Length: 332
Image (cartoon, rainbow, N blue to C red; front, top):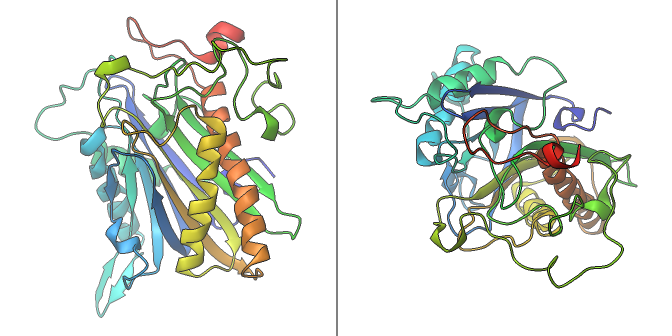
């Protein structure tokens, strides 16, 4: 176990970034099509192929999931991932045609100091292709990489995090999250992460929670203040399991696992957030549909919270004037 999304067999992750632009993309590639669903909680989401994941619609499995910066421009990322999959002969077959199925979500990082004057076409299709092509091993970096490269939060530099676990019933579950929250992932002005009760083996510093909470610690800190818009903040990610799930069960898993956002970000699911969580199942191990799914969702929510904290903990500041400091810049 590497404490990464790739602990789930048949799942690979690749990143690509453009340091000049200050943004990037992450591709989650499934070696075999995976059952998938989506749960949207934020007030300003940006998604691709979300209607396809509706429970009333026909296609149940996806070939990949694309996560990206760039706001609406970043939706081109899915096209790049799709192009790479097409070259591999992957996709949903309609007679002689193969159509790779690639849902995606984006976050807003257009005001982080990078050069966004990219000309007629944005770089995100090429970033998506490069990210998919880079998904070649079980290891991948965390922090200011991929979709989390240009991410920020209310207090510290955001980033991309991941974590994994095994339920008491032996089901594997893992998460990957790009953290660009309007709220804070840390308590007050201190080093403590809201997700501290769920931390495993000091994976985000082992600082625990403060001995007591003061009124100032519970004061709401919002990135951008009153001027923040509904498109400036989003936390996006995916939770993946090796359990055998139906599409409705995957939807329920996404809904329960979204609790992890509330365990790690304060506040969350606001009008100025675009929070999106995908759920996918590689369908290798049977699961009891009531108690078993509830247990899986409970652990998945913990894993999501841990992934969010790791994304901020591992992040590094962008090399631009006035860039937001990273957690490690202050707390080491």
